[in-house]
Image (cartoon, rainbow, N blue to C red; front, side, top):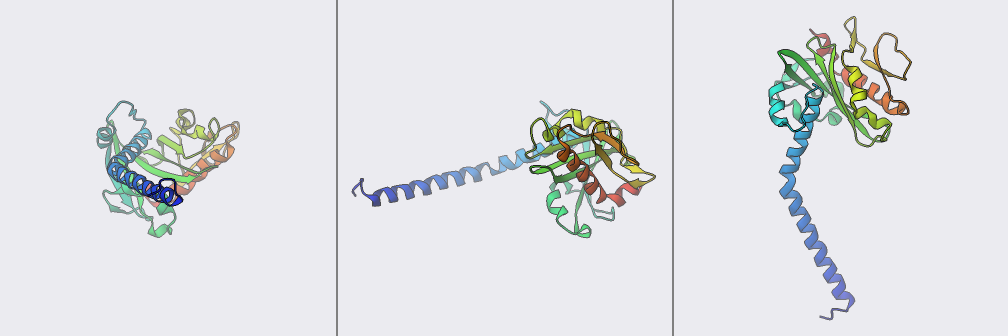
Length: 230
């Protein structure tokens, strides 16, 4: 075959494309289990962070088993429909369903002998998804800790929701007043919120701050029956 011909070039290029595609597909398949495990470990770390547990240099899986006693699934009535399986619930998918059809994850935890509940959160920021977890004391009202993250908020502005400086002020705040769910407001520095506990938003990151407030309100509302049933 004439190696200088167009036919040779086309055949050679086609064969190389097929070979490279096969190698990439095989590599991706071979690493799939490792990738999935890394995703699970990262989620465990996020959940533990809402409990103020430092996972740096630690065995996240062992810590998760130590603190998380159950990953329950409940319905919109606050009824437990499964004692385990909540870890596999995808909040984005459930939020797209009608309220009565949603499966809601609740993590039952124990920290130094005290019961905690963790509720997952999911919302939309300025440039993409935002998500997180809020840990509540046994009264299902007082915030014990939070974790927030994002897919693409602006560094130094909206991305600050992932920092301790933004998350720590939520600790000790209450999501209910007179046994009614009111969530927590995120306000401009110097402002207040009538009838709600509140934290300061991010200077220059107003849209993302409001998005966190909306996420909390929307996601916690799904758990209204669970939270108000003591």
